[in-house]
Length: 82
Image (cartoon, rainbow, N blue to C red; front, top):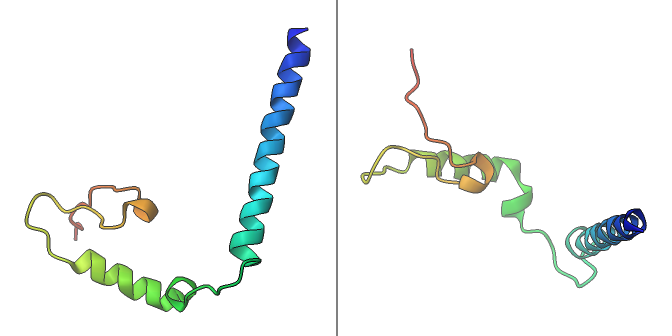
């Protein structure tokens, strides 16, 4: 009886993930509601230059940290040893 319930729950979770992935794919990648991806997102050179500028931004309130915690996991930056 308990195994049957666990199978049902696992199936429901897997189904929810499949539906959410399909919705995300259709809305974000296929743009079923219209729109375009901005060049600031799709252009690698733009992203690299933006990252360089963010990392060069002076901080005065504490130890240096990476400015984009989403892509860099907010690790503390150590001085480069030569």
